[in-house]
Length: 55
Image (cartoon, rainbow, N blue to C red):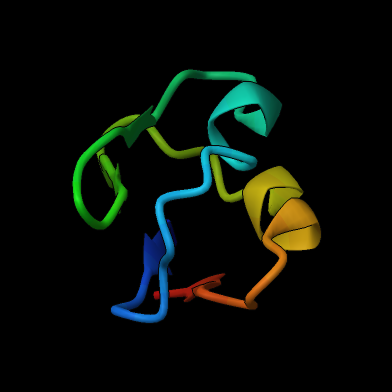
């Protein structure tokens, strides 16, 4: 099960550097590619606004 980024995302970029498989892409709201995400949760652990959750 991949993680997802909600509309609460502020596009701060903190999560991108934490993803070991580069599943996160930049945008107005960042997105996680569910085909690449390994569900490690590293991105969710560092999100300052709590915008990343298990799908």
